[in-house]
Length: 86
Image (cartoon, helix red, strand yellow):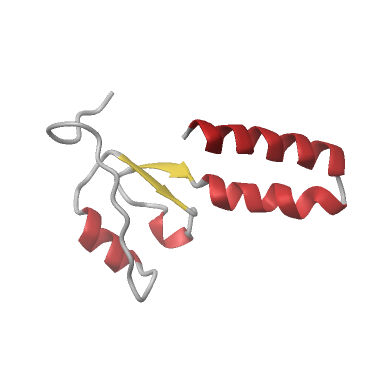
């Protein structure tokens, strides 16, 4: 496990008018912890560990309901449980 700072874990949300790699570089610097994002390509080579966002993942299961209702419903139920535990 990498040490990325002092104290307890930190959650931060940042808004920017653009989605440029420069904005992410400016915000994160040499941070090497975990960044949760929508996997936008501009963030692909940041030094930080990357984790996917459940809201974006959930959207794909929601869209799959028309083609695979059984699987999609089961997946959405599991995501719902994760949200409840959060």
